[in-house]
Length: 401
Image (cartoon, rainbow, N blue to C red; front, top):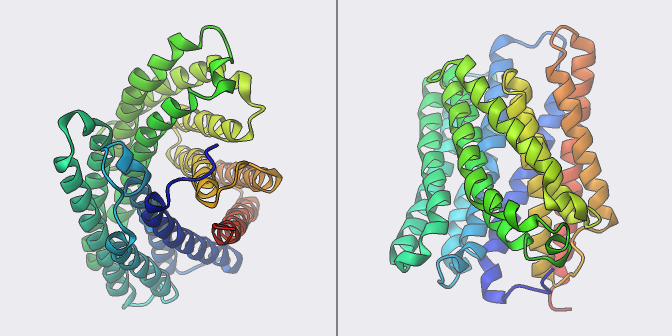
């Protein structure tokens, strides 16, 4: 691990990650509280509003903050440009955070007539922030040399999808179109969030392939790296886009399932041959490998949309996010070992949360057991990210010592 990133590179990353952690913890604690307090027979309106708020926060609440914090700092290296200064990126992060926290506040009044207006207002603030962030990224891509633009084009395209979906959700919330809002969030989770993860992960594969533990993992590693870096991301993006279109009712379920399972099988088969599997003594690589396997499972399970969605969100995105964010925070703090015993414990808790949520999705006919699993999953998820955020605060405070 690098000892530290240059201070100028860290300003936007630090601000974005801090705001993202705040929203992540607030959203997770709210959802855990909802599960603990869930009545046996909630009113239909309150239940729909809670589901809509959960979908919005877990799709658009914190991911854009982490993504833009990364793209404005570390991602600037792709464009061979200086990072975006905190004084320029900070107001966008604050605006997005204010919108997300407004959504959380609105959710305490879910089931009331004013909920839709408050939710739409919060979504509008988040959409405005993300729109400005993507406009700034587009301007920087335009100003880069032609040969340096390519790595940032994919995240920019995914970000523009996120902008469109976020504005659509604001309009749908105002109109009370809850079913379509939920479908839009599901589609955005597959296409916008999943697509950004895959494209950023492609860059991380290039970085990780240079580590000594990977270079020496197996003699034939060289022939697998071109597949990991070129062919596989394109197939994954295709599969993610197909699942997003399915969520919107634009692709037949049979076709979407066939595509997802085909790519999932390829991904799982590659995982078993992946050179990283020989180097899992590195905890950080082990976490990334687990995320890789979760993504394969999400695609293999796409015939069960709710199960696949939570395998994607809690399993793949949760595992990958915990590993990569921890790496960047450790680099910022000048810590050589990002994946220590404490982080490995948090990672184990995250895996249990993902498994509990998947089991709950498989038990719709067993309400008592399903509810207990939902409570366990939401509580574990919230505790993991609460503890991780406290860890980040301590590590940020170590800088310069």
